[in-house]
Image (cartoon, rainbow, N blue to C red):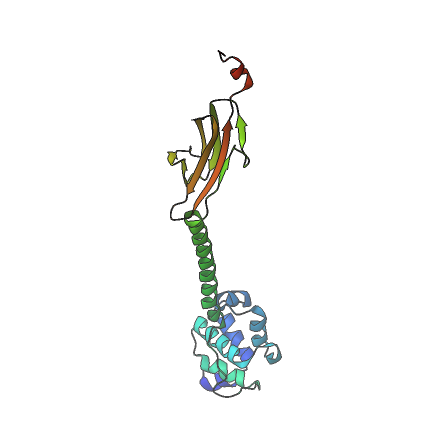
Length: 223
């Protein structure tokens, strides 16, 4: 192509030659360059008013030149003839404004992953360092019974350890336990200690009062 004639052509004419000469269309060029179709249409119609700021257009023209295999100088010269205004040499942005968004997207993804990690670690710390709890079938007030044994049942977190009056109790896989304990006449105190790995220890006490029933006392021999 004759350089002088090339320089005489408008931007719209140059765009038409590049698109048709390479078997493209606006849709395909938009796909290859990531340039919005409305801006490509404006370039093909010398519609400066519909175009964004000059630095963005310079980036678009560089991308169009790269995709179509030409030097961007002629395209940019034709664009300047349309009478756009610039603020000088400092009025320049990277050729691909979409590339600016990639680091931001990576930061968003990294932030989301970091948040998930923090949540996971927080839950794990709670599992390891939290305060253990226990549910038992004994009331907080004294329980009075007339039998020499009692069944103590309850449930803890299966990850916690349990002691009853200093002796280890081994719950099942769900944390449930059941123990039959002998009772002495009078007050029987039961201390539960629940310990979480690397965490705090919880202690509770329950009392069972064993009273011999009147029917038993009536059967005793009186001299």
